[in-house]
Image: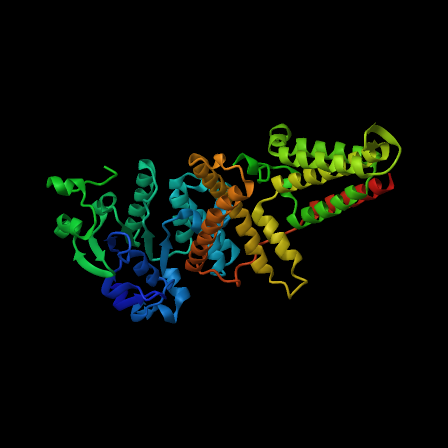
Length: 249
Length: 251
């Protein structure tokens, strides 16, 4: 079943720049999609349409068959978004308060909020940090906290905008492990990155964007070699002609 | 971040940690007003009680005094301002500078009171979660329907969350400018402008990102209310504090 349907989507910014241009896309439940492209190719603009942070200038985005603009709250519940800069996403003054922020916005009762927060913190391994102030966490922990904040809203689709930016190697591995376990638990995963090497071994679909258009869409191994034509660095293994290995192996 | 740790919550199991935050906030306000009215004998008594409380809640008094160094400088300034400006019989006289006995007495009294109010606030902050303080403020604003209490509560929470982030940005920007030789410029206004412009720009950009992130998590003012509950213990402490305040005023 298509959980996300994008029909002829275009978006122009106030200054007239075309952010994305005529995108048509269907995303099935349970897919693991990597969207590659150089800076300014329209990746983040596309993601922001999935939960109504931006509304289309032309075309439509349907989440579970309902147009996003018709029920933005529902779209935001189904599609959780983890932003590039974890610091600007964390709003709570403690780890616990931050994870509770989303469920509180959904007006859930206190018992349900507590249940969701403890489950989310346990899933990302931050239970022991519940009373900590977020600015004292490491980069990887902050990213995991952003994920917990989204998980507490129980979304079906989780969208990651450059999840590995400014993370060290252990941080990348922690976040990658988290993403994979979320996929295994049935979530649909969409990741944008300009460095596809870190995650491509786990993806079952690769989209490459250029100038606001989707220029390639399919199985990753089909066109990894031509990725560099579009300003996306191909994994080292692809250059050497061997299979791309996971960063976790 | 050391400068901010003194103002943070410390986990614990003391009575102060367990009291209802509304009572604690009321006690803080009441005792602060009492301290402002207290004289030397009463101040001795309050200091003894307060230091006992700080030891009981395991507040790191010695290590925190380093974090409070700027406050001590402020207190010193207040003392000198009082000592120099209060008229009375001269204690020290040198050319046109006169320090009066009354001035020293007044200065000591004011500084002592200020110090006690700060210590009182620290004992409150270190035993109360920021989310509880926010909830209490929200509760106290219920009788004022024209004040958007939920908006104020979320603003308080964001201030508490983003103070360290902005502080870090100031430090980063200052370091980056020092690395490019800003110290060679002697004009403090030039240096201040060069520091403030990027910090303010980054803060506003951060605020934009934050607004988007809050929207993505369905933010609205119609949210689940915080849970607050009081017990018999709170009322017993309430009675004790009221008696204490009466005794202090009578001394």
